[in-house]
View 1 (cartoon, rainbow, N blue to C red):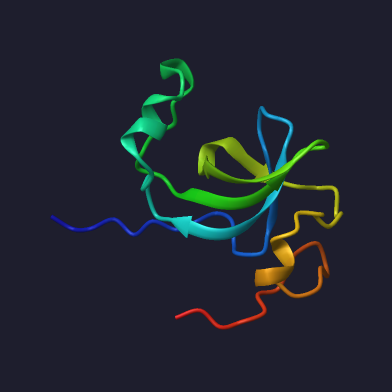
View 2 (cartoon, rainbow, N blue to C red):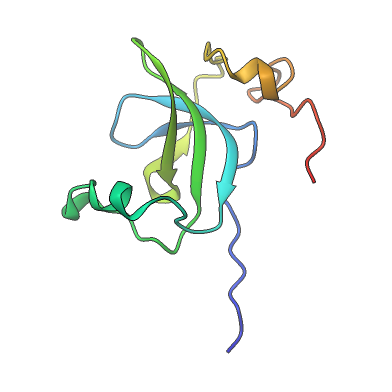
Length: 110
């Protein structure tokens, strides 16, 4: 049986927004498929539960009211067209200055 290579649609440092919920965020990590807890997965209403076999993104996310870390399936994300930087305080710890609609990593990954 041959393994299927999964390619993430979004890149580290890219700003995305949720398809249905009013937040946007910057990608800081990607899982090739679901890798969170069963409890987290089961907490999503069944009719809205995403497939497990797709990339899931770790985001520094923000709404107009708050900052947090989000874990979102690829099917629920779209590119953010605003061209605006995020104000999330953790972004500066991992990324360089916002330029050309994205954040460059400020250190090398293994």
